[in-house]
Image 1 (cartoon, rainbow, N blue to C red):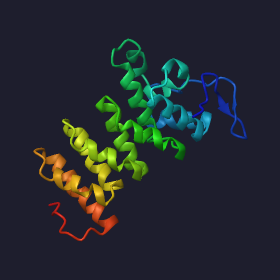
Image 2 (tube, rainbow, N blue to C red):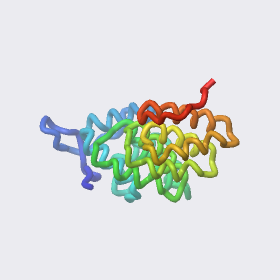
Image 3 (cartoon, helix red, strand yellow):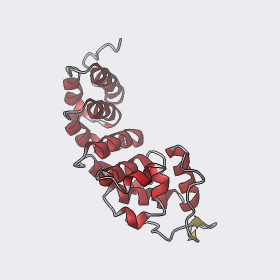
Length: 206
């Protein structure tokens, strides 16, 4: 996977970088707004590739021009934090909610097996948004995670991308001790039924 590199800049009329990449117009912009600016500078393909490389564990020093767009004001904090590495991977994944290219899907699917829950959870959200069918097995694995928020994200992902072999995982989540997980599982089963025509009775969301 090739990326723009630290010398990348604003794209010219044919989509090629020209000149140094400026920083965001404000670090207080929302992630969506910052990533929109990055996309305007680099083009969506190059922006998505840079974010995917960071999700995959690339050294952020090799992407110093891109990092402010992903992290905003949190970038300064991350430079002195022991948790910086997994936050960088999380920001890389989050950015793919706003910029996208089909060839970065594999990075998102691989991120479901990240050693830290934050990047994995974010990859569940991206996989659901981008409807990555190959994320089904990873979502099924994460449906048994110890954290409620990860199980919720896994249930939602299963609803969007799961196949018939993943339906049982959603049924298991209906018995989860947490009510938000149970609600997410019920919605997931409705979505699975709509996509796959499952046949069996689907739980009442009320």
